[in-house]
Amino acid sequence: MPGPTLAEVRAKGQPPEVLARLNDEHWFGRLYMRKLSPYATIVFARLGWSPNAVTVCFMLSGVAAGVLAAVPGLPAAVGVFLLIQLYLLFDCADGELARYTGRFSAAGVYLDRMGHYIAEALLLACLGIRAQGHFSLSGGYVTMGLAAAVCATLIKAETDTVIVARASSGLDGKHADEALAPRSPGLALARRLASMLRVHRIIQAVELSVLILAAAIADAVGGDLTATRVLTVAALAVGVVMTAAHLVAIVASRRLR
Image 1 (tube, helix red, strand yellow):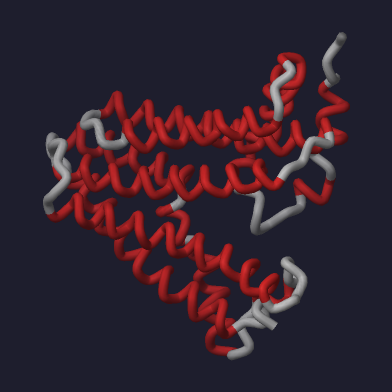
Image 2: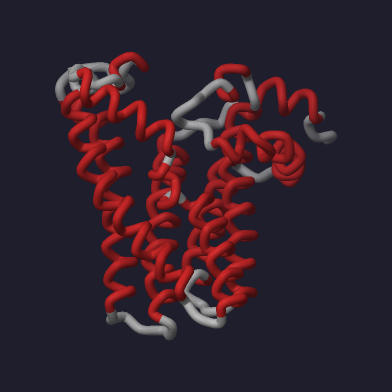
């Protein structure tokens, strides 16, 4: 039986409302991966894969990238970057396949969310090991990486717990986009500034993989681990600030009302 055409995958798997998402759609996806992912989706559809099978591949790519981040040297950093590109491809394709086939499930949503949690936490934790200079489960940089991983996990939990809190209170699971704005003018200004600076992105998997590669190149040129260690410290600093700021922003907004 012939598989779907490219036009069919784009029509059903990439409807305008999906491409227009600002908070849920990664900007690398909008920039180039959504142009490439339909070709992968066609292959998965012709192979008879389920959307959840693609999501599992997404999770495995993220785990592999995280573990490889602990390996020293430039080749490993290149591998991390490539694996995270594969991770992003699978992340785009699983939703496209689900929309094309109409095969949606709570299990798929759960696996997708857990994939993001695990990949980002592992990347940050293993970045600390890379910065330490040798494989170790102790040391200052290892501790920083673990702390940054905890912060990244907390930030995601803060977002997901909004849905849980609303549902537990009898409200709709989703809130209106305008509810994101804090009620305080000062906090609203701070949120706009943070949105413009985008510093929170350095602890997200795709951007972090690029920064790990850039730091590895700088380290190879400099002959030490200065760039990777600076990146680890920066990731922890951003993680700590964003964990607190995100919690305050949620409580100060209308998301829980």
